[in-house]
Length: 267
Image (spheres, rainbow, N blue to C red):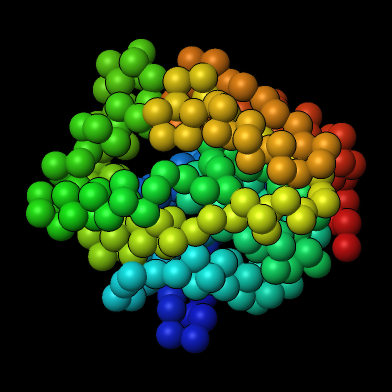
């Protein structure tokens, strides 16, 4: 187990692959942890340095009192990558992780060579929507929110599988303070203007049955970045890395190959 102590916050992270390989960094979504990537990483080629971490308030990372600001979530990843001496990574983020990825790319272009923005947007929902969700979570806990969240996360076919129980357990075991803290960060974030300043290779991924960030929202964000590619993964909801790991991995491999990021470190 790898834990980084970052000025009062403990951040759980894991590194797989080749120690001196080209770095690819993975950021999880709201209500999940670094296990979100368990199906994808074994499908990637050897020679990469694969880094993932639990967002604060999630998984085995520390859960300070909220609310959180997006800047704090960005700083967490920034400090971890500095600690690990990571530069010129490909940064892959789903949903909340994709918002953090956009902001980090703006703040630290030396750390981020390219972006994969999966099932995310520059702005997700409205402040009122998030305040309503936070109020419901405080009243009934994540158990009360789970049915609606899982419906948005996964396609109808996947929701009939026994595997759904594991994802439900991951969601409801997320510390309530961590979930609420990250909801507040999303509620207060509008990256539209900042994301439009980005000039780096970008791949946007959408799921055709995503109830949280529908394909049109993903395309709208991709359109802010000149030259960004968009891929639609079918038979997938908000977490296509879980539902369609073969397609997801091949999509990511293709992007890395076009970047020349599959062989050796680019620093």
